[in-house]
Figure 1 (cartoon, rainbow, N blue to C red):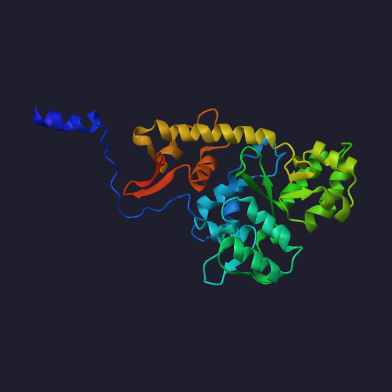
Figure 2: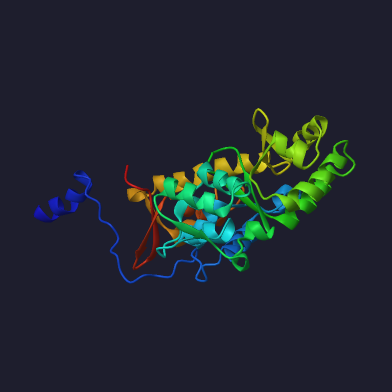
Length: 310
């Protein structure tokens, strides 16, 4: 009787028998080099080009890069802008997706570095110094573009610039807005790495007329942010966003329905993907880990994905 009661206690009172923690087992989704460029390239290789008939540039999400480069500040520094705090710690204003960081870099082009130092010191609470020209981030080098995907303020996509240019030219070929798009790719894209563009910037700096800006919106190169402001966009990305949102929820549901709301990474990747997971399990798992929608726990059986306690 006592044995039977002992076996029933954990289930009756909801006590959970967690997997024992042991020596750290290698995580197949974590990078070792700490290179943000290699992380983006790895995610891009997972992107299902055939699903979109190669009409979209392969898209990696910023959150997915964090799954391969867990040091978010280092990842942001390599992706966006080289910034270091004088106390040896990297400035964290680039970590996450706060619009503050983008405003900082926009202001930097208009203010002298000393003014920016003083302004950011007041905002962030400590001094910082910008990196040298020899330590440029991928965005500064023009190798990548970052786009706002729209379904979430924190959802930012990363595409290689050459892939973006090639797919956009192909998508607008023979269309009425082709000339405006070609002008944008030739003048704006190489000169400005911003996530969004203002009306005076487009008209005064780059010489676009209002009808041309309207054509860029029709082409899907720009999407309206607010009055007189536009996000850089990927033409035809709506289908990708739809698949991504549904797939994220489906993979989260797989973990949620598992016993104790936790699942071994190897077991999850070995399962057959539900029909709603069009982009592939590995593609979504990188997002869940990097976006911190699941916790990663090292166990003797391998990496365990666990839903955070609520």
